[in-house]
Image (tube, rainbow, N blue to C red; front, side, top):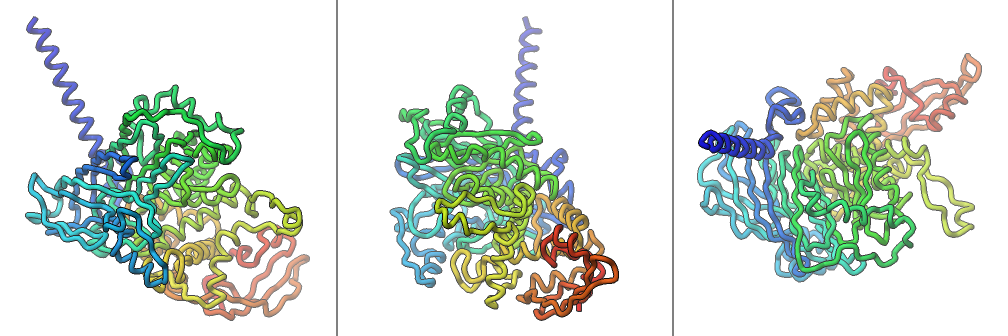
Length: 613
């Protein structure tokens, strides 16, 4: 009997230890030697460092009050060589509240701002308690940035765990808020984004990131997340990371009823059916994510689900039932997008990708919020999914330089769209026969990249890319030249492809992605990565694209027959200040026009391109 008791005790002890180890591994896999993407296992250069985080968050989302009531435990590792006497947190939702810096920016741009009921009270994200080892900490709040004083310095290679109680308020004022709540055919739709106290980045370039949120971009440290979100029982949701309790919150019998295929013939906009009836109870959805720098979720009782896989990656489409007829190919199209990016720029490292019908166009790790319907949403899906390369897997400081993500994503969006659809944009046939008769097809590259760049360049607008994301002439959103972080950057990358040639360019971009995956590069890190890999002096190239507002402007000075049949000699003269074309080149006209249809894309000689006249 004692033997059996001892055996039973040992069995329980082993199980307990395994469970503890499992929990430890769950929290610390990101930082382990088994994680091939952890920065210490693949430093972009010797001496590089960055901070690590582990968030454990439990929150309730009340669909009556529209309040998120949460508790957060944040473990923070100081990998820097410095002692830290204080830390900073971003409270992004404060940006929309009355009295915010962003509200003042709207006012100074002549916009009449209306605040929601919580925003009117100055409520965005409110921290009721933040403590360390049971001791409440002194704080100073400056709108979207909270300074937290530590009781003793956090030394290099040490960690601490913050205990935080907070509330975040959904609202519907007129200042743009990515944390959306809207009416979805009689139900409430929630996008739970930028919703929790998020520690600021302390990095090798600037130290603490203390930039106020002004409705542009974001910046966060990589790590792991365990998040439990409680919603009313009738909500369907998806989020960053793996769903740990799927059988509990989304049993197969319910999942089958929610399948998008069941609604393939439902008329657009028709009232949704009620598959899960609200009964006053709640469900808690549990997610775990590794190798990410943010966590976001979306929830809606009318969501219906499509799912396919590519290379083991789940591609999930969430669509409001009345829109299901226009989203039947969303999951499939997402697999195609991920395949292109993985093969051409670097393998996608996350277990899933969600595209969600959410009246938006916004990106988060493993989750995108989108709008529209097929085929018009194809470029939007390509863009938002593409963010998971230069926003998700490469954590650039977008708050400082948005071009490193938005512009790179604009480029690969165009790249993928051309690969999947050809040279022309795919659009619905115009309803008007007259319009259909005279409308001209739109080149992908012009519609997605060149036109946006040239519209400003022709007008002489300032288009210097190495500009702070919030400093484009004090304008809102994409105004004041900010749109050039998309279009000029994408044009620059096409120009770089032209200078290096197709194969070297693609290899160099793959090198950059691999070198800086799960790290924090700046503009000089990108240019150095490309130069060091190609062994080509490209400083002249990056200087004029990043640091100046010079524009490309060449004219054909002469055109004559060459020595070979079908060969022509063209002499170009540079009128603009940007150097890019060689002074003389030759081509075979039929082959040249058939391959490219344009001069810039047809010239591939690196030697002559490097020293233009």
